[in-house]
Each structure stands twice: as structure tokens, then as C-alpha cells.
Image (tube, rainbow, N blue to C red; front, side, top):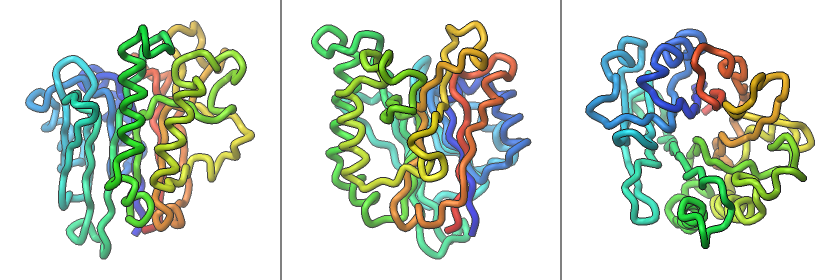
Length: 272
């Protein structure tokens, strides 16, 4: 079975519902993981999403901030939500696909929205940065999650808000002191990835020596001309699933759509 999934920090699902409709109509992924939906569950546009051909909807949202969602053409066996750092701030959601979705062996998909961390990379003076570091530590220390990476059939996606590699940012030297690329974030991010032996399938396709971005700031007058991007959105897979990785695409053109998110959707295809 071939499965195509998308991950996208949509930066308000209600504001950008037309863009979501365009993406789903044009690319037809089997499911899409959204982050920063900024929408409580009872206000989520479920009817509109079902009308787009995605009848299975899993939600973990709140008013005004954060929020994740998974929209699918395929039915879910289970849905799970986890809280990190003793905060119920709607940053995780996982779904499992099984026999009703046409899979002989279950597949679990995790959708994460890691805290951005604010502007100042000092946890002593910036509570947002302290929260981000604690979140990364908890994710790395989650034994069940690590076990799924090491021995399960699992995909982990989302806006992980860290650009870990030198060429995941437009300038490694200039961004070493900027939140998302600081050494302490990269260290904790790498510990999380290593704990589950997660395979970074995006970098299987694009060598680490090549630039790869998924986010471009709203501050740029011409984002494409300046191309000062970062890779904040990731697709990880456990080894058995990574073996069936067929390819991925960063849909950078979506950054030029009308009233866009500052993140581009990422699509990845697996043979399961």
C-alpha cells in the first residue's frame, strides 16, 4: 500500500481554510497533519473538511493558540493526545491506522507542534525558551515514543521548531545565536531523534550538504528573492517504515499563495 501524508503549520485553520482546500484538491494526500490550528475543537471546520474528501478528523485544539489536527481519507483505529511539561497546550496528537485502513500491520502517526521558544535564547530570562528546552527533554525521555521509533511502524511529523543541521538555515554562522538553531536546542533535538533511532527521511532525499528550508519569515519583503529560510518542519520514520520511503516534496510555492502561512507544506510518500 502506498501512503502519502502531508504536514503543515497552517497558522490558523479557519483563516486559511481556502488554502487547505486548494492543497487537498491539488495534491490529494491520504492524510494531513496540521499544526498551529488556533481553533478549539468545537469550532473546527469539520463539515468543510469532510466536504473536501477527508471524513476522518482527529483534533487537539484550544482557543487562540497552538493546536494540532489530523485529517484523513482513511479511518483511524485509535486516537491519542499527550500533554508535555504539565501543560495542556495542545501540542501533540497521534493516530493509528490498521486493517480498516487497508493495512495488515498497524501504522502510528505522531503530529507534534514544539514550542517556538520566543526571541531570547536564555532560559533564565525567557520562560518560552525554558519551556521549549523542557519539552524537547521530555520528548527525548519518553520511553514509549522511543520504543515506537526503534521497533514500531511509526511516522513522526510536525513543526518541531528546530533547524538542526548547518544547511537547514540560510546562514549557520549568523543564526547560531538565534532561537531554532542554537547549540543547546540542536543538542536536545538530536537527543530526541537518537532516542528513537528516528530516520530523517527528508535528508535521505536531499543531502545534508544542500540547503533545505520549509519556513520563510513574514518579515522579508520578498521571501523568495532573499531565501532566508529555515527547515523547521520534519518527517521522521522508524527504520521499517523508512525502508519504504519513496520521496518527499516541500511545496514552497504555497508560501506565495494569497495570505499564506509562513511555513510550506511538506509531502512524503511511503510504500507500506
